[in-house]
Image (tube, rainbow, N blue to C red; front, side, top):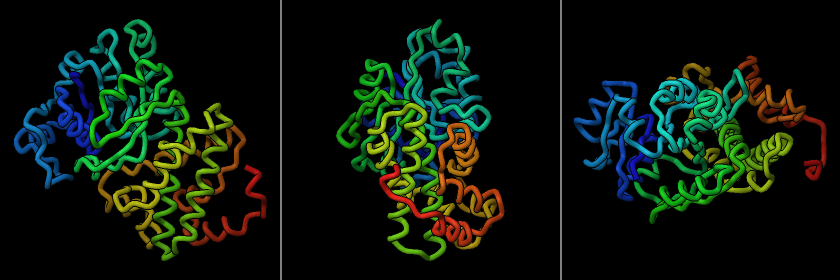
Length: 336
């Protein structure tokens, strides 16, 4: 299969490497000429210095060629660049192509998920050129995928034929792919679990233990599920790979940028300093305000996410935010 990866960050490169190993014809695009020049010269990504990428992997800044030459296009840019990237590729799309989003976020201005942003930006092109749009999401740290460690992921698309095709393309001996038609639920999990992971890192930075992290993950999943069900998503999605699976790995792993940023904030760094130290996009920061707006729009209480919002944007110290959360009115767990 001829596949174009749009974005040369860690996740895009890890997926490109995985697909190359399966024998697919892979082209990687970046808008940064210096990044492409370095990759063409060394076939080594700076974040994966111990991995030599396949000589068959092609790198280019020619977006028109990537779009015209490949049947599947994987948008692997940060969530804030999904709309602009989609706008760039729109004139070059061909009939019947599949666009797969692997970004995890909610657009602040519209509250759309990433697949919805793609659909919205393409407009009539989706129908006129029969473009199918899917999402890949799950507990998948790039640092492990690049080493071919066993991993599972979801191919999410309401069109079963497309979901199955993506499943076949991405499945190999170290990547097991499941399908799920609930693309909104899958993408909502992918965006909101990052905020819970940020909170988990903050707890670690405060010097707290495993008990409170277990509570955070459990109650964090409960509030994500409450919102998702109100938005029309399937309950089972939240207990699957995109929900519970991705939440666990992101909220407990040192590989997680969100967890790393939270640790720094909990240890006393201001947000800007923490983001600079992490050195990569921390998607949780971009997801907080859209999550709060969704909470208001659907009249669903998100106490953990609201507490993170108070610590990140409202000047409340992480310890005070935690204290306020612990002092909330008592309730039954079965209320959920």
